[in-house]
Image (cartoon, rainbow, N blue to C red):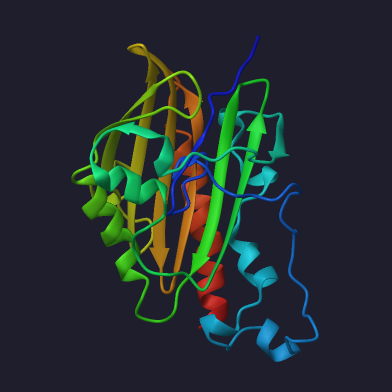
Length: 249
């Protein structure tokens, strides 16, 4: 019987494990934004600042099911994240791990949207998120993540009765083959989950920054599954993020 590992939630947009889990809605993101009464046609076409973006406009940078490479699965559906793991579930590890799971770090975003898709055939999940920051604040976000995971490389969570060991690997895009030229800044967080020493799942979070935005594209795979298709997913996320940045100008 297929069974999903309980996801964790991480403040910086990690869907599913705290950073490993995100707070998505129950429906797929709206396909295209339309001007609202508060947004003029000129604003919808671009030229306003990041503070003037509507939530609908920001959501255009989220991935859709049609954006997911077939190598990750072909039976994706939108999913609700019913359970989120936070610092209270950490039963072992540096205090920085609790800080991250409780989203107690980095800059305060202006707005944020998270979403998750699941393929019950391949037993795979795909995460997507977009956050906007006031001018000058965005640089704090990735640097805060780097500071935390320079210390938090291993911790334990017990969201239920079964302890889960988490091993974290952090890699800058500059050191990740194929990712070197993606975004203005970027990094990958890899969370390897195991139970009683046996690997179960691996979660990948790719954070990329362009202008005053940070997007995240990643997912959850079987412990032995090849993560290389995430490169294509992140490239698609970069294109959507660049379009949004160009809209703001």
